[in-house]
Image 1: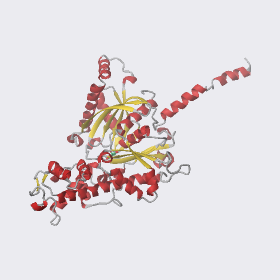
Image 2 (image 1 turned 180 degrees about the vertical axis):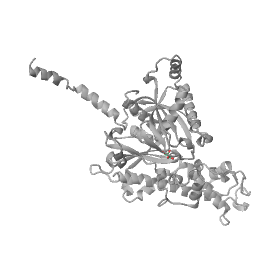
Image 3 (image 1 turned 180 degrees about the horizontal axis):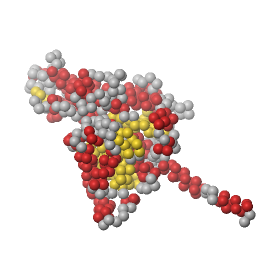
Length: 487
Ligand code: BGC
């Protein structure tokens, strides 16, 4: 063999065919963390939010659509403040078992049989599960993260500092479920992912935000601006997109109250909470707290010598010709007694006599025969509390739009262009059910220097319904692919 022949033989080993190139491109795209709608497969997701625990299985069809099967249970109050984390996490694992028995029983039973007979379990038989855990964690890996602190009324001491994925996996294993906790996801990150999967047009989504029981946002930041990474080894994170998703935990914005507004009711609510001094932004914005702020504001008017809410003894001003009474066991006198859904209802009543408000006062709060003036007063309070919440929400959104350089349209893009858009995915009971929440938010966005009318118009806000579940499934998919399994 001549030298040249030898060289050609070696050279042939470097051959990288067109087919290889295309396979490479596909694999590369599928490993980039932000989904584009082509992902496929069946994944499990669980979502521990503030109020409910959801279990779902999600079939991604690969064409930006998905089908979702889900079950939801209210988290029992006593588990939120349990003595040990085991009490909470074993309850969660049990819900996953119930879900599998109801919706994927064949798969579940055959797995149990194999487990009993001691035969080898193949990795593709294991459901990859995305765990949406909507509390602050120090995330140290795709499926590892230690709880930094509880929020939203949860208070289980022994969980703080522990890896919440491991806590869940142990209880799943104790029940021999064919489930691997593959990814740990904050609900805002899930919402961002889900919106990226479903959002119209070619614009990427900038921000995923929750305005529900709690509030928080996660956004896409340039890697170069993430200074925290300087301390991390490059190999521990993926640099390929040049971006990183930042979970801001904005619920704790301005805990020192240097710019946040405060009323005596905010101050009292905080002092009586399980976590005084933290989540101060959240305590003025999110659903868990608005009812309690309103309750305290109403009580202050009940006991005010001049205002006298619900004190109408004058039958001439009271349509029912009766005296207004507050039941001694009224929810008005109980901490957390007023639900945020009450505010939504009040805000929605635009009838001349405010009949719905008066009926609801009687039904939910034990306030009988409230006058039209009482109802109007309650409505004034509700509008003020709801509007402040929405305007504060606008502060967080505007800050992120501006700081990421998205407040101005780029020169290439003209006003009204399909891609002259800043896309935001939102979820949560406030944005979904509180009438006019987005309107109030937009009003404030227009007032922000550096946004104005034009900037506000460019912001497209879309509900990412069930976003956190779908997003968690998408991330479980990415994690499984990175490991070379699942999908
Ligand atoms: C939690 C966040 C979460 C938000 C919305 C806050 O209380 O700290 O992690 O994203 O609630 O659920």
